[in-house]
Structures are given as structure tokens and as C-alpha cells.
Image (cartoon, rainbow, N blue to C red; front, side, top):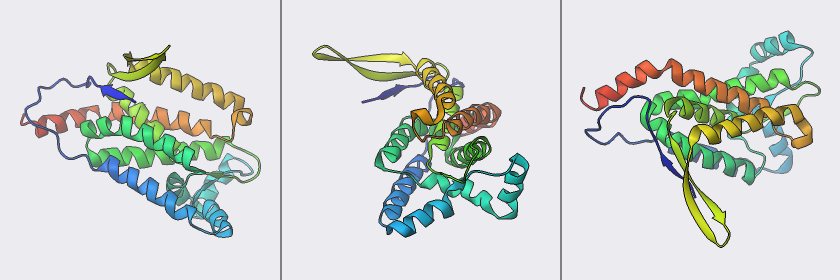
Length: 237
């Protein structure tokens, strides 16, 4: 159970409610429907789907990998890989974090900018993984890199935000508010640590999480001025 209390980086008095947030629910539905559709495919077709849509890694060197991405049209897989997941737990984790951090981020930056953040952040995260994972070809799938970009943008947009968490204290549950920067900082540090542990801690593309997070932070910082103008227009200034 999680609640969010946000302090926006641009302090403006609220005169009317914000517009409908449709981008986050759209991404949520697309991820869920893609998982259901892929899960109904026969096993041989499912494996071919992972190879055809997943971001393939493994090249002789970085230059060859980069050329192959563009010469063979494999750059599209950097985007399509976002909509494939290994299992329901993989999907569920991404969906939960998408809702927690995506809805307030979209409210501030607008739906179209949020979609750009999700897709570009996910593609950059997958690209970083393609270059960092060597060896035989493997498929990188999942929206974790894109969701990490949303988390990074949230931190940049709401540096003073607090997240409500429920902690079990003996026989009771205690609701406390913790600075989002602290929780996200711990999460980011874990991603870096797991990236060094590598396969010993599961078949997870930790580099995608790190690259996506950094992209999200930079994206939000670069878009601050335009987001502030959008908020002023929407509130009649």
C-alpha cells in the first residue's frame, strides 16, 4: 500500500484541476495486453517472438553492434522489447512502479512528453544493455528501463516529495512518510551494486535500469522550462 505526497519543482497556485491523465493508463494497458497476447502463443512462436521483438545483444565489438542495429533495422527492437516480459512477476513489478511514479510525472509534464520519456528512455536503456552485455546473442525484454526513466524523471521533478509506506511493527502496521529521494537513492544504489554482481543475482539487465534512470533525470531537467510554461498556460497565467 503506497501513497504519494508531492512537492513540485515549480510552485504555482492551483486554480483548476489538471487535465485527464491518459498516457500512463494507455501504457499500462498496452503492457498488460501485450503480455496476455504473447502468453497465448505456442512455445515455438513465443520463442521466435522474443527474438524478433526483443533487443538482441552480442556483437564482435561496439562498432559492429552499432552498425548492425541500423543496417539490419534492429533499432526498432529497442522499442518493441519494452512490451515483452518474461513472466507475470516481471510485468507486475513494472506496472506497480509505473502507476506510482508515472501518474504524478504525467500530471506535471503532460501526456505527450511523458510518452516520449517512456519510449525514448526505454530505448536508450536497451541500447546501453546491448553494448554492455557481451557474449552470445540474448534477448533483452521488459519495460524496466523505461520505468526506471520515469523514476528518474520523478526524482528530478519532485525533489522534495515524500512517499507513504506501511511498515509492519510487531502486531501493528505503521504508516510513515519517507523522502522519495532517500528511497529512490537506495534503489539506484542497489541497481549499481547488482550490476557488478551480474548473473550471480539473476538474469536481470541492471545496466538498463541505470541507463534509464539517468536518462529520466536528464530528460526532466532539460524539459523543466517547457514544463513550467505548460503549467502556467493550463492554470491561466
